[in-house]
Amino acid sequence: MKIIIAGGGLTGLSAALDLMEHEVIIIDMKQELGTPCNSPGWIENLSLIPSKLGYESNCFRRGWLEKNMAIMATKQGVEMKLKTKIIGFEDGLITSSGKVSGDIYIDALGEKSVTNLVLTNIKMLRPPSRKLIQWYGGISIGSQKWTRKDGTGEIWWTENEPIENWLELMQGKHPKKLGADAAIIRGKELASQVK
Image (tube, rainbow, N blue to C red; front, top):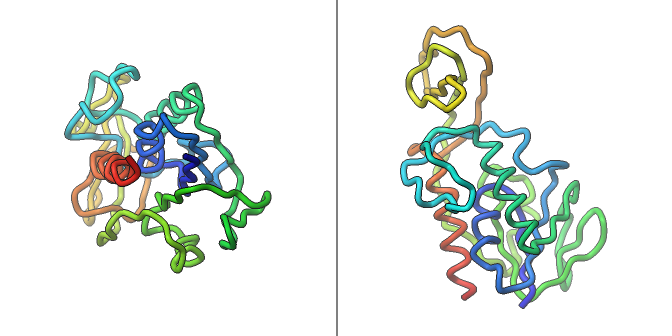
C-alpha cells in the first residue's frame, strides 16, 4: 500500500516509522526536517522514542530528535519530498512539485498549519484536534528545569518570563500538556488506523 503523509514533524515521522511495511512518502514544506524547531525538547515516556536512536535522557533538543527520526525513516525507505507545498487535491495531492498519489493519506500537519484549510474536504486520516495555547521557551546554562547532556537547560512558560541569561528564546502554540509524548502518540495512533 502507498501511504502519503502530509507533515514531517514528530507526528508524521512516528507514523511513518510504524508503517515501514508499506511504501511511505512524507511531504513537508521545510527544506530540512528538524530545523527550525520551536517545540519543547522533553518527553515524559522515553520508551516512545525508538530505542535504536539511543536516547537515555528525557531532555534533548527537539529538532535533533526530529532529525534523527527522519534519518532513521529515510534509511528504512521512507521517501521525503521537502520544500514541497500542498496546494490542493484532485485524485491525489497537488503540490508545488507535481501530483502525489497514494492509497491512504495521513494529515500530520497539526493545528498550526495553514495547509489544513486546503485539505479540509479531503478524506484523510486525521488525529483529533486539540486546543493550543501560547508558550514561551528558553535555553540557558542556569535553567534546571529540563537539563540536557550538554549542560544546558530548557524551560517553558505561559507568562512571567523567568530571569535567566538566555542562549536561545523560542515561542509557539502548543497543547497545555507540554512535551514530545503527544506528537509521537498521535502519529502512532494514525498508523494504527492503517494496519
